[in-house]
View (cartoon, rainbow, N blue to C red):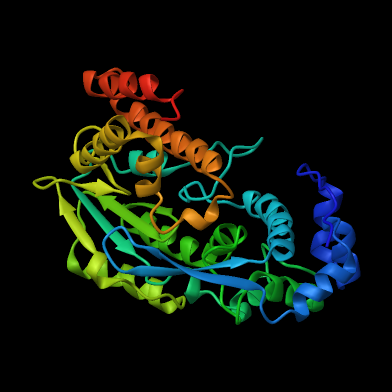
Length: 342
């Protein structure tokens, strides 16, 4: 199945056509993929490859990777959905937001900054975020404002192409932006509560953070009730209320008096560089990508990805540590290694 090229830059007219499409034939023109391919994907029972990946704190998470044709379809759908969502993206949502004419780029750093130097910080984690979102929820979201599609058939086609066994899969390139769209009403409700109670609210994917002069048990329970009312479950093990007297973390960044990283982050980075220095890139990258080696067609691809990942970790640290000696030392070690393949 040959997939035709697709221009990522889409026009306002295309957005309107997308919101009004009512058949696979219409969608075919919008995403430049043959009707036969889309229909085959819709009828194909084995559209996903399933594999486990290790969680950071033990256990495994099942990933469902779409077939190549379905992945291409989902990537192109995500471009449309991102454009549509960005028109309404709340300022307090920091996950999966790219910079454009109307919106600056957001990330875990911009998310954490909103809660800097606050007396109380409350962290709440949504349990099984993607699996909580089903085809019915997706169809419902596209049948009402602000993301309304003007055809029930179009909304049905979208929900089928974006789900596996009616559930939003981890592994689809469209799942992150879909989750933002589905959580939109919950975001609005939580933000309204926070304005009323003089709290700051932000969300990064399934990590919800609230901060303010006072957060008590009554407020925590009220927030949890809003989340549950909208159909989401809470991971009670990850609910944390942090006062200034303890270390306060938001999406892995310390926010007590100034932004800082957990010492564990620096230790892990040092460990990766030490492994690379001592054992070479092949052993270091193989260890780093344990459980994920199937993603790479050859060793060179894995080495390139490994270097980019380590560089990304350093770049993230630089945003927080800036010119501190610890960062300079780690960067020097990386520069000495980055052009080696031994």
